Length: 371
View 1 (cartoon, one colour):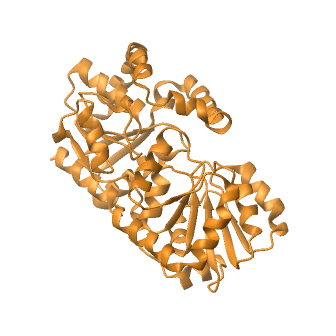
View 2 (view 1 turned 90 degrees about the vertical axis):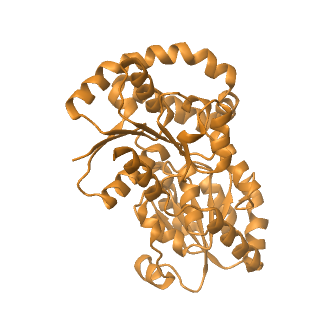
View 3 (view 1 turned 180 degrees about the vertical axis):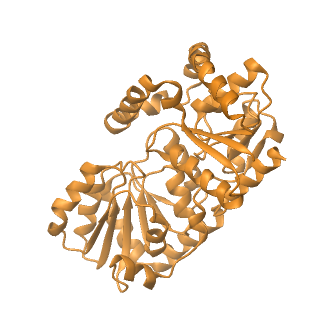
């Protein structure tokens, strides 16, 4: 029986979802695999996880520009390198104990921090256990770079070139996509979904999302859309943002248009199948899911840094529209609803650049290393 250890950080972001998607795809292909999924930050530094999560969430919510200025700066990455080495070594005892206990056949990392810990461990101990690092944004940052990573998985050729320019051997890099759930391989008829969820089959649908954490000015976006004369329904997915979900629940009756509110759900693939337009931020997992469903995507309020780079790639490939402020959404929505050809053109382009079977492609790569 082959044993695989998957590492991510945080229980709420795209890195965790990517890890779960890979676990799902591995089990789908080979149910006999023994797979363990670890929150690397919690496992190696249980006291530090809450502090890191608190700081990150508060920075991106309240001072995102600060995150953007620091993100992937060459000087910052270089100056932090000695400290990263020390921090990583603190984790070696736990990692060594885990390796002796489980005898894994492969490591997978869906975030740069655990990838770096494992890669440093391999360099220090001479371990031959293969490490597959799966980049969950469209542009890999410098913290991913390490000579002891055996394979990198990226979304596109541009991302592959970024790693090559940072000194990674081309043979180690595969452009296979960002891992999304195998549930996205199945499409559902709109009538079936409307019967299940209570949506109107006659009205166009605009889906508002903020990723798993429900980030962004979603209340304002919904209110701006509600003020339009056009007749359509609004679907809001709040993720794990309980305050946001509670706000919509309290104010639902104030909306003139039909509005449907969800918290964190496991059937977002069905709601994406039903929706005509999706408004979201620029997270790699959410965007990859929407592309796989051939959605008409509007991106607003991407987090500076990684999400802005995601948006740059998507705009360059004419796969999304970007609106900088919620108040500017009105004209864009009206334009799309009045000119369905423009909407369908964006849907077709989304399908063209999507990797709907990304997780299964990554599993095939992992099996290559296992055999």
